Length: 201
Figure 1 (cartoon, one colour):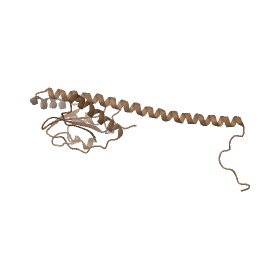
Figure 2 (cartoon, one colour):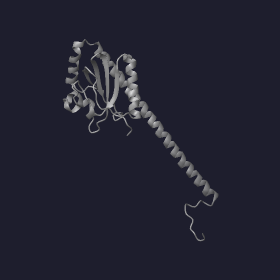
Figure 3 (cartoon, helix red, strand yellow):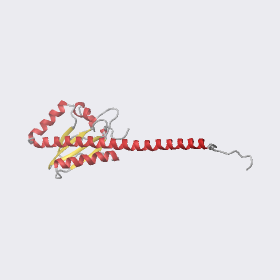
């Protein structure tokens, strides 16, 4: 149609102008690609660090289980009482006559990576014989003892300092291991910083 105005940005008419425009577009494309690559590498590094921390935590769990296995049966409750009275320990541990049931969190890729490596290490260190369950639970859904007590029903010195990080309230890693028929070793723990909240910030 005659007299209609052309829309869009006009291209430079000179060869130099067009070369400068192409150079600018190439630089912008290169910066975008480098940002995508950097973000991918950052996520891979974070996941690797998360798995390494989870593996270290699992070795500590396995050592705790081995230690309690070495104790005479009569001494195990006494040692647990001493740990609770001291407070501030890395794990919350209990001995139960059955596995505790609680609402578990749906796994995300990062949660699943932790669950996989913790289960792998525990089976390597403790063997395939014991029944081992590992999952994540929210602090308000956590159960601690045979009676199924919630976290906020316990003295703060027993578990709060190890399993809460207010106001974040990150997920709690719960591991239950059958040491003998009718004897379940329960361990609850947060992941170490900076992976406490698990998901990317």
